[in-house]
Length: 99
Image (tube, rainbow, N blue to C red):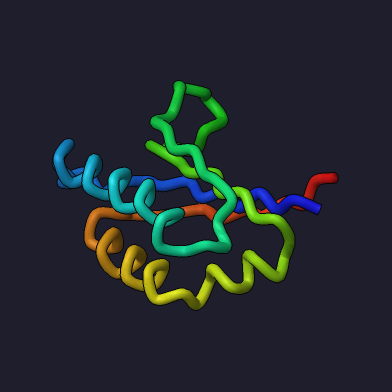
């Protein structure tokens, strides 16, 4: 079963376009550092009145829950969280399992 690890971000109002891009660049680098990640896609929001103000998101694919659990404590993931935290006002994380 494939795991889709979905993360939505609300950037702080003071986050510059360069800082937002650095967050995107950092997350895009994670698959080269964390073998458990099968793939990922990132993108900016397309306005939806039910979008709750989220600005951007990333969808990670993992082969199974065990691979997701390898990713969570990985140093590169922890470092990414610490790097991006000053620019993020809120985030929503939602994991689903698909056949």
